[in-house]
Image (cartoon, rainbow, N blue to C red):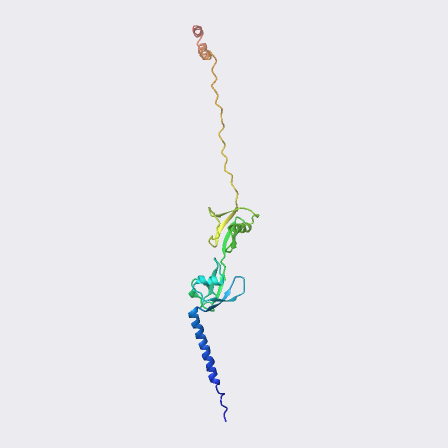
Length: 230
């Protein structure tokens, strides 16, 4: 009088289980043979996460190319134990099918000071910015009018700006003033002149005058001796 289980119900369930196992084994075998597909959850900058299917990559460079990761950008993934932390993917073995990755665009940042009003103001830029654009941003942050040429200094040393300057570098900014070379005054030129010849008899007259002066102080005999000169 007891109801009997439907014939074949257990066998059908067993068949479905075997099919699932066979399907998983076939998928694993296909992955080993032709690489299969990787399904990755990718977070691009300023975009919602998307699911990307890529051919099983053979190298990290191949994966970066398949995901469209550009030069200067980094590929991050979450730590296995600390999901709130991310670290840079440096080897393909760090990833697997189903992993979540993030395309990170590293930024550059320096601090500028313009004594005495501005102290350690941050200026940031991203890869692709030209040196001229960075200088313009620094001049603007320093409060200088547009088009002002600036001079960067690290203590007593002048700094040439580069897009690869180390992060968190602290520089002082000043408006560049072109200094004219110091003018050296030439010494005055004095024209040489020929010596003026003395008039005839000047030497003898001077000798007579001097002798007369001395003789005048010696009395009448001295005066008589002057008259005896030829």
